[in-house]
Length: 81
Image (cartoon, rainbow, N blue to C red):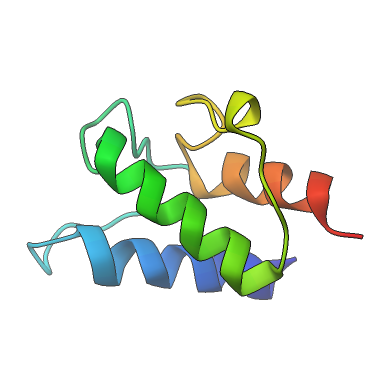
C-alpha cells in the first residue's frame, strides 16, 4: 500500500505542483485546496485507471474521493481485483 501511495503522490507532485517548495503529504487536501481542479481530476482518474488497470465509475469519482492521496488509495483499492 505504501508503494501505491508513493506512486500517486509522485504523480500529483509531477503533474500539479508548480512551486517545488510546496510540500504535500498523503493527507494534503488536493481538490478543496485547489491543487487539483475538475479538469485535472479527470486526468488523474485516467492515470489511475491506466496505472492500476481498473475502471472507476464516474459516480465514484467524487471530489471527496480525490481530495487526498489517502482517499484516492481507498478508492483505487475498491476496484483492484
